Image 1 (cartoon, rainbow, N blue to C red):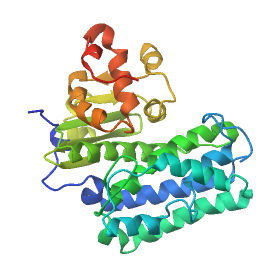
Image 2: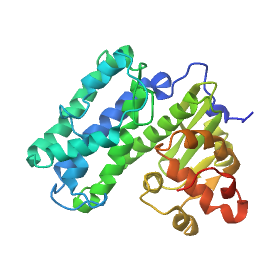
Image 3: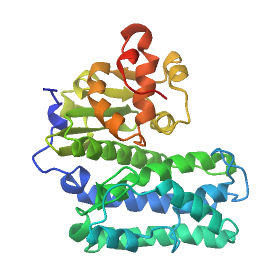
Length: 313
């Protein structure tokens, strides 16, 4: 059986930050929406972005609280009615983008603020405690509501990076929150498949990791004392680099082999990372899939493991 780092070994029934540190989860989600809203106020919405030739407004619009964009009230209603499985988020994004492309700038920005306000009301009211653990459909399959909302900090961070071409200045905290949301989401997916595995991200901002076992997962921000001061070895399977670069890689916006050659990123315990292969195989849209695949590909010259894997990119 895979040996998890002690600091990332979940208790029975643990569900990531939603159970171990709900205050941190709530604060991170609310902060990310507030930071993104402030960032959007300073962006030229008609300027090009880095995202597939989209204008900045076309990056921002799908993140807003529009009536036709599965608002939080609809998401919660789905959860209470037991709507689980896969949700076609890609089709929804395309439809919302097309429907609101011609909205005035103020309306686009206000939609982001409405989304943040709705999140704060849910997170700091009774909603998180009452409904946060309910399963609900997502683009990654069934996730707890709280984890679904935490996962959204990741596209907020990567979308912010795409908006730099349009004048955005991206706060480091927005990137750090997005990385934590990504790690928590991977933990939920691993637990859903009852995979025993861990992964950590070692960045200048700190170390975040997740460990999954027996259908439970722990997500934690780790201190050197948690790992006996022996980074990265005692962190288990890990990726080491800047938060920005890890987000760029996981979202397919950066080239892992080039980053590895430049020594901007390093992978530790590749064999341990392979324990996440079932998650990658079963959830093709998983955030982080590109990182796992790319990390393995970058090291194939010395490990020869790429040919053993049943997927490619």
